[in-house]
Length: 75
Image 1 (tube, one colour):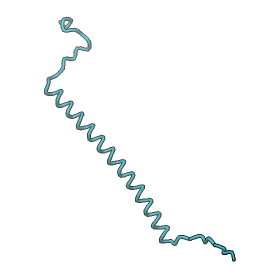
Image 2: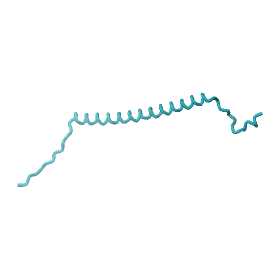
Image 3: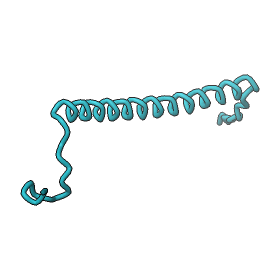
C-alpha cells in the first residue's frame, strides 16, 4: 500500500502578510537609522577633531603667511 503525500500550499492569512510586511519595513527603517547614526557620529568626530586642531593652532599663535618668501626678502 503506497501512501500518497499531498503537499498543500499554505496560504498566508491577511494578518500573516501584514505582519511580514510590518517586520520587513521595521528592519529597513532600523537599518537606515543605524546608517544615519553612524554617519552622524563620524561627522561629529571629524568636527570635534577640526575644532581641536583650530584651537591648538590659535594657542600657538598666528603663522606668518609669506607665500614662499624668505624673511630677508620682506623689506
